[in-house]
Length: 421
Ligand code: SF4
Image (cartoon, rainbow, N blue to C red):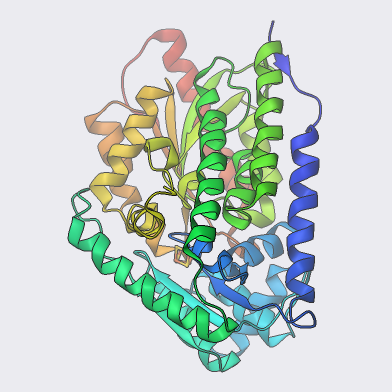
């Protein structure tokens, strides 16, 4: 039996509630005397901050919320009025425009940070973004220097180097909060992270089934939010239990996101948030289901074996930072995408290239050439933006996507070899 599930289940309701509670905690943090750190999703060290009861706030998540709720245009224009060029990362301009307009986001008022924590994990924009925020907010900026992974080997010296920086960060957090690092508490938090990570991997790997019980790109972005926002809490573990139960039910009934799963795709690159639904529809129209994506791993490579480790809390936090997607070289990223095609028995790769995100988009045209010409993997590359609606050309994108799947269908019928792109 196969079919399409009709509504999002309990997992989605719980996700909305947890994220709403998180934003409310952020909103009330200054009045209630709780400290807030701004940090980035890739390589985030949320567990260490949580051990000091510091609330975590991610400007990228704020920006994507603005994109989804279609409020990003006004913030981007504010930043451009301040002199930020049209080429600057859309997330940065959204965040700076949000600050300029008084930090009223679609999910509530954002607090001023007490600490800016830049985990430099491969994207140079991170550094300039938080330098600007440090000036605007006039608050301390801590920069973690995370050695780049050129060849996939995580050297013990890299881990030691980062652990040393984490100890310095702990001293800064102690100064801000007036309390010492409780190592036992940190281990408990890290253990909770590992439990949520196990469940999240079970969900991701459920996409190996035919039909896949969920879309590992468009739907994964909802499923993955708590692993970044709430990792290290009991609520996060409870959420992934509920989400896994929902996936298990779909598997038991042969339900998936498309009525009939006609194409299995691997997707690379972040989604165009302001046109998220419209973009998804273009794939649903063809019964195309993402069975794996790189974007759902921007915060961590748990499906490749990494787990936070309560026996080595700081070391495993350091390894998590080192291993994140933006910190990996282009050959490593290409290997990952190819491995997903094989493991999830995908028919094609779709690359959504983001105009203002060089960290992701550099090398994507080379990926397409390599996959299509040398590996025989049909690969489509389309371009728009993360949060800037001006770059989403609906008709043009739809034409390219329709032509790609028509060509895939033709190949299937005729058994023809050759490139589809
Ligand atoms: S350039 Fe890309 S990776 Fe870097 S901050 Fe912007 S969206 Fe994130």
